[in-house]
Length: 412
Image (cartoon, rainbow, N blue to C red; front, side):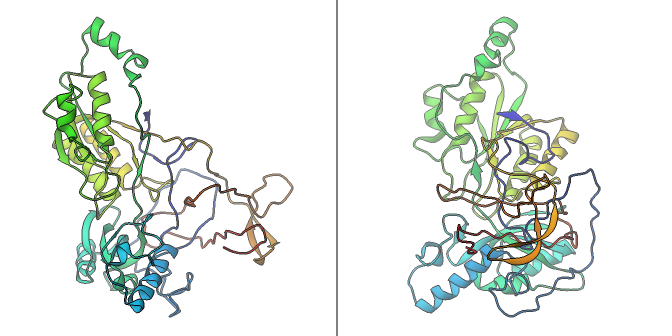
């Protein structure tokens, strides 16, 4: 486990996995980072679709939803036309079911709204959204939306409320998953603390957020039976879906119990079937307030956590740190240098397969490099973020496209 502060939970040389498409499908514009204050505007978004072509990722009716949801919508139309039996969630025509959360003919989405938050939520519910979680401060709503309603939700506009953009919900990412002996007790000299100084954690509750806690084999009862856990773990919320049911939370609690056997133990799942980061943020606050946890740890990440400003869960961490004195620790992952970060260096040039335009120069020297070679040995996700405001209406000022080309210069 690595200790982190609340800023940029995903960033750094061993940062967490990031995310894929931004909510406006505006991908890279990497500027030099600087301290700044992001102002929360309330105006009605200026962007309005100017094309009826759903496949048009720049101007079409789902341009503010991103390529993933565009593909989901198109494949759903094919599924309906095929007359296939069963739900789209399990259909062979659904190529994204391993990466995005589905339920029947609904897809899990994160909706960015503007204006009156309550009116926006009501409007989304009228469109069929089953709300799984909300973040009022960031004006974010998460839940399952009928795929047939994607274009309607993307176009929701009113004088005082509506949709700014939306994105697909990916599955959560579990960090440091695996079976290993607990060497932290000796590594942190906790064994000496317990035997020599009688420090056992008594009076301090430790809260854990992870994948599940009581869903594998015999669950918590097994850990109690083997003496690896006490019989009074306070479970506020466990995994209610079918993804990442690994009881990694139970393993984390066992580690805590080894190191600090006198501490109270509490658990909250880091996501739900219908929502992701909003559930984690709620869990952070519930552990601090309801379970009175003074130390909270997690090993959960989301590819769409904000990198360059506080996101939903980072805001919750700041909240419990400032108001409850909580010490927060997060598994940093093991991505190390599997990523790239740079100021944007815009130059005019030509790229084979794309033509002339203004491109990112990946080479900081006098030599220009208008592309970067990436070798993929297995399936994975391409993740990109840049330092424009994330949750702010009309905050995005850069329109940037990312192109993936094969060795022949063909856009793939």
